[in-house]
Each structure stands twice: as C-alpha cells, then as structure tokens.
Image (cartoon, rainbow, N blue to C red; front, side, top):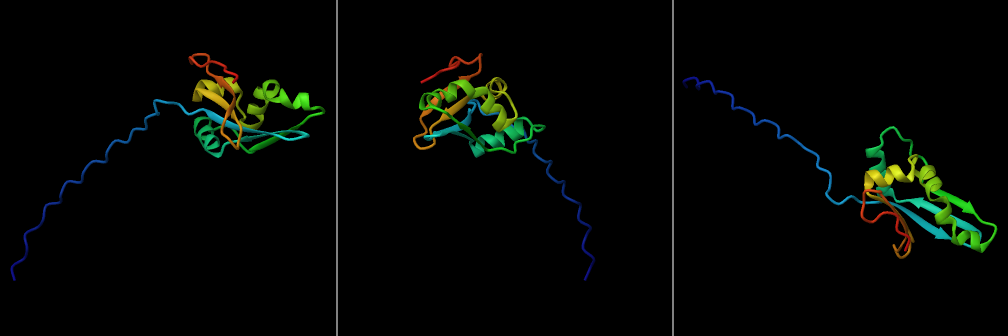
Length: 132
C-alpha cells in the first residue's frame, strides 16, 4: 500500500470576537419593602444583587435584608421616604444616586404585588424621583 500523501493542516477558524453589549433599557435595582406592626423589612432582589456585583466589583454585598423597627404606625408609613439612601447603602454598599445613575433607577416595591412604592431615578432620566 502506497503511503498516503501528507495532509495539509486546515486553517482553524479565528475565534469570533465577543462583544458585550449593554441592554438599551436599563433594569432598575429592585428593593422589596414589607411592613409589619413593629417595623419595615427591606430586601435586595437577587438579580439586582448580581448586577451590582458586576457593575461594582469592589463592593462587598453581604447583606440582603435589613429591618428597621418603628415606635409608631405613623413612623412605619414614612420609613421608605426617610431611609431610602441609608437602606440602599446598607444593602448594596453603594448610595442610591450612584445606583440610579448606573442602572437608571432604584425601585422600592411591594414583594407580593410588585407594585412600585417609590422610584429614585437618575437625574438624567425623564422619570426623575417619582413617588407613586
């Protein structure tokens, strides 16, 4: 049997250049708000937590839930409006303005209905700071 002719190596296809595109619609950071008789719980949405980790790699995201105790029911009703920035910092390590600038908004929502209770939007956004 005659020796087979040497095969020329086939050129390997070049790896396709992978580009990561940001979505055109920015998803807000979602913080869920649940009130009870003695206080208000704030919880960071797990998907938002992952996006914050990617956007701010140096930030330590170790807390997903914060509870604020209230002395009166009236205090509980206004807790979102009084503690929005402090809650954002405690849950994310980033202040609410920086989150809104990066993600378009910070949305405080009811966990049962997904109804938005408060929206802190980027100043550049046409939806700047809405309070439903």
